[in-house]
Amino acid sequence: MIEITQKPISPELVIDKVKTDSSGCVVTYIGLIRKHSRGKQVLSVEYSDTEGKAENRLLEIASETRQKWQLSNVAICHRTGKLKVGDINLVIAVAAAHRQEGFAACQYVIDQFKQTMPTQRRETYQDGSIWVEGE
Image 1 (cartoon, rainbow, N blue to C red):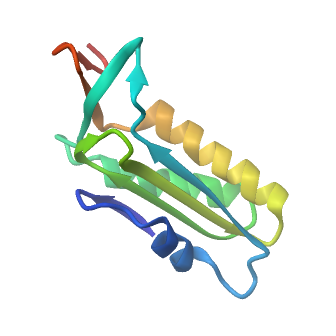
Image 2: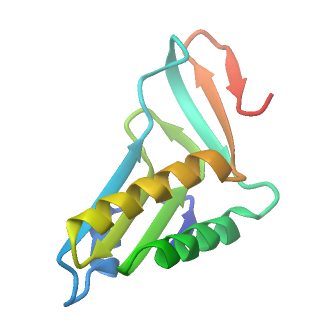
């Protein structure tokens, strides 16, 4: 399951999509919008996929992950649009027979997401200032 959505993400639904009868575990990561960033109080964070490349990159990350570990399933759901503090912006769920593979694969997905996602992140702070990733 790979999804880019502007709707709230339900971690439970993502977990249900990946678990199988052969899964010994489902390792999950839930990314949240935090209250403080770069020493400032966050008002909102906006993610955009202006070039439409995010879904393909998520598919590539999932494929790379399946090649490195024996997994039952991988799901990556990324929320775009304007999010407020406490909102879920990312859910990763990795189903595996054993926890070692599950944790390693989940860590890999998180790292690849952070390093290579083409979505743009724009943080707006309580003081009115704005930070845009890559600028």
